[in-house]
Image 1 (spheres, rainbow, N blue to C red):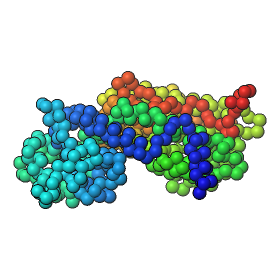
Image 2 (image 1 turned 45 degrees about the vertical axis):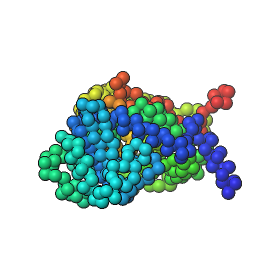
Image 3 (image 1 turned 90 degrees about the horizontal axis):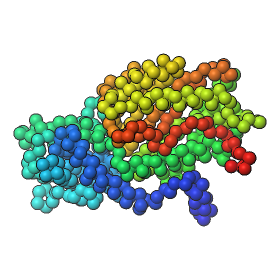
Image 4 (image 1 turned 135 degrees about the vertical axis):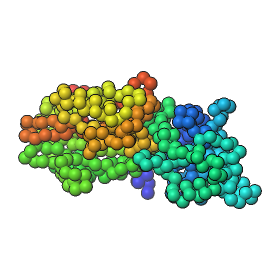
Length: 445
């Protein structure tokens, strides 16, 4: 046991400079962020979307995805039936945060139900509604945005059956309000996000190094599970299983061109390979999603071949074209169409499939293409770009490599932030191929 503890301690130390907080401190950070979001962000979102009451209803282990992002740090699930009521009085500039539940919803939302005085939870909810007389009541149902479709049939029917008839016409889909809550990032969250992406980059850098990969022995599957083990040892989580694939010369094709569902595993990594990974972590209720590339040096090589370095530059150019087309209020489909047209006019062969990123990996918000919908995405792609939002800038460009007698794809993905000052990468982007082993300078650095 002592050796295991020492190993884990050393494992953690060598990962990155960023500190990973113990659970108790993580809880404090999460609850402080929630308080800020409830007190300062939510009132603005309700005003912008025209709701003066928002009601979220969930039962234990069957949580509304939006309510799940509101759980206190010490709550891993809802309890029994949990009902949250947010009431915005714009004239008084106040927001009430009530839980129609047996317990306070952490420190941010107080319980508004005394079961001894009113045994029926639904009746208590109706009392709260009638006392405040809201003009627009939001419930989380949506045809197209899955995260915003959290109220289940049973709870919806019970709510509507108990709601006085005069209020029923006031019930509307809270789709835009729910999207706003999910997609909008606060200043504090963006400070954390930078650290989160930095940790992600550091893990990829170590995975794509001689510390992990021995050419001729290590397989792609070995690296994938090393990444999973690394994340677990750090006390973090992944929100999807990492993937590592190989592109090679036409004579020794890798596993990249196979579909995800039947991609060969345990491909032995060899000198001259172009490696690609897709990897993301979850920490402090935020998610990353990152794709980077590495080259395995052949004997006597001190850098990747020029044709691969130039190929990466084409990928970076597609990134620049794409993010330069970002504009508040512009739809995802319009940004996609403009970017693809410009890229092709420059002789590039781009594909763009960028998605919102934040409290969920594939989050709600502006969708900017999908790998199988390069002509635009109905509804979700028509949603306009909003400020203070984060995206996985995910795309590729196809490049003909004469030296390999084949086409390759330069696949890149980085977290990017859109705010009032425009676009920026949350923690930089890859502009140079990683090498295995690392190339050292004359000083040994």
